[in-house]
Length: 593
Image (cartoon, rainbow, N blue to C red; front, side):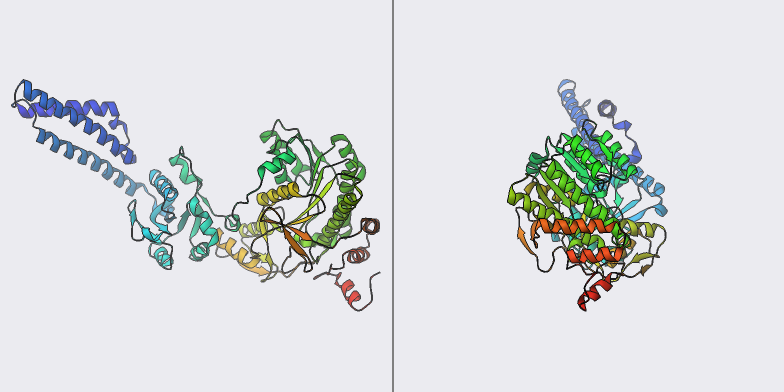
């Protein structure tokens, strides 16, 4: 009788609490720790009630009808173990038979803290992902020899490559907390050399969807490895300069101009006036504005900055208070072949905008220049240096004579990652096409900066300038283009891609300078921004020379125009260019005509 009562009590209370906690509704093959905890809680409450019932029966009807407490405890332990083990066995069998090993990669996760653990949990929770966890990689020596989630923890040391080979690792997932470590060390190079693909996992919040997380893991891009620590800018100071202002941006459809537009839009300007002569990209910007900043008044104007009458009309109608001048022809080989266009767009366009800014009382005029303006070796770089000379000398004149309030600021920086026509998109296209990847010279180096950080520094420099300064940006360490190409090829997983050397292009240097030899720098309140001390020109003299240069460009005599540019900028020495003969004539005393 006692046995039947015992079974009846256990059956009643376990079924009751299984019903209350819905333990029966979980899918066995997708069981997790949460399901085990659910079983534990429901069984514990059920057997607590069984024990209470046993005590009550013992005091009311006698021991012969009361279930023995020892039997209830044993039943509780056995039931919990059997239910838990049954679920885990079913899940393991399902995993073994349903994981397609042909489509999965043996994977290490770099990071053993919350970020790495979350990645591993997401991989375990979704069978259709392509990553099969084989281990963790840690930097902390305390983790050496540990086991996490059933796999070993390996150290990021000299033995890591051996561990990768032993486990036949094909994928290496980096947690968000380890991205900076990846940039600052050679671990990425070592792993890529083993033909292992590197993936970046996105950061997660407390309400992240674990089931969709594997799909958000993306293969690493070269921009991820070249990016630097986030630049801190004085948001409050910038906002005080731009909030409620009418802001004109030239070259607004370009890489830099469009990013300046996005960042300025965040500071609640009264109006954005966007000017570019490229119709289709400007239309794309208009659609982006309508989608993201529908309430912001932002006329998009198809206009040529070298058309003085058109630009005067723009200034008269919109009366800008702040001007960001990003419009320019920038491709070195193209401008070597189109000298007059470089003068008429870059120099004349800048002169028109600067003069109109003074005439219409613009508060600040921020011009985007380039490191190629330093000791220029090509027409494009020299044209930008002439632009610098004009706006700087104009700034000094109006400061000295007090004839206007406009402050002219010039900013210089190097190559921008992913900008239109830059080397990274070109390499990516060549790799996708099967190669070869063309590098101009095995020793050529360049400085790189991301588009957002370059534009943030432009805004910061614009807010701190008083007029006449040329600001240069800390571009970090230079990158050898050959190494960049090799790394991009390894990142693509296309190990059959060849690299060919095409030779330096017209006017191209092996390296770019941010400062000329004779220039000095002065620090600013921002550790990434410095002021260049450059030779100053008398505005009245230089204005006449620049007007002559512009007028002469309409005769389309390239050799004569370049000769005038060299007169204006004596440090302009052509490299790998037909205009090098002008430098030879100068060195032999022949002069220029």
